[in-house]
Length: 231
Image 1 (tube, helix red, strand yellow):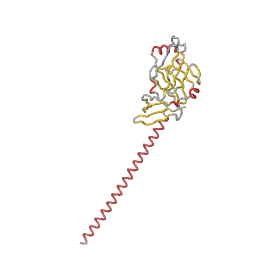
Image 2: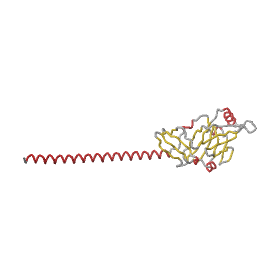
Image 3: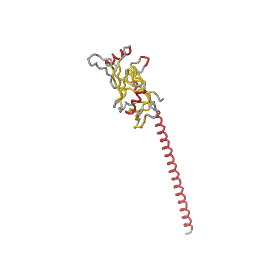
Image 4: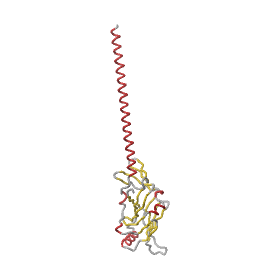
């Protein structure tokens, strides 16, 4: 399987009131947003902007994934909720614009802490971890950076409530980028070789033209000398 990736999503978390006006323990948010260009990311010095297409996430993907809701992607801190192959305490909702989630904060230390922090607004963002399918992304050169489009995700592993957007610069599966750079490098090398061959051909033509001119001038002066002698 390809490299696991993490991505930050600045969409705010919410903790709404119950219908009777009492405080709810249900935390809702958006883990993935479709067709929304990311900020400028960086992979080993290669800058790129990333977009996730709607077809990247399917009901079948959600149904086969084991997604845990975490705090800062740390399982040791405790699991807040879980969607195991589409069922469980974590509700995952696929929409036309992205992937939403909802879960009831557990009555545990981490659950109470996260719930209170969300209510206070101290925690207001999330990120998600995933694997891109082999061949599931495309890379296009755009000036001094690349445009990456994720067309197919192989597996979702966790959603996470995070303190800050530290995961925006997380490394990515760069197979597609590596292949693109290899193609670009091969094309550049071919262009260099072609230019060198053309330059060599031009040089040989110029030498041939110079030699032909020299022969013509030699013949002319030889003929001229013979005519002078005959006068």
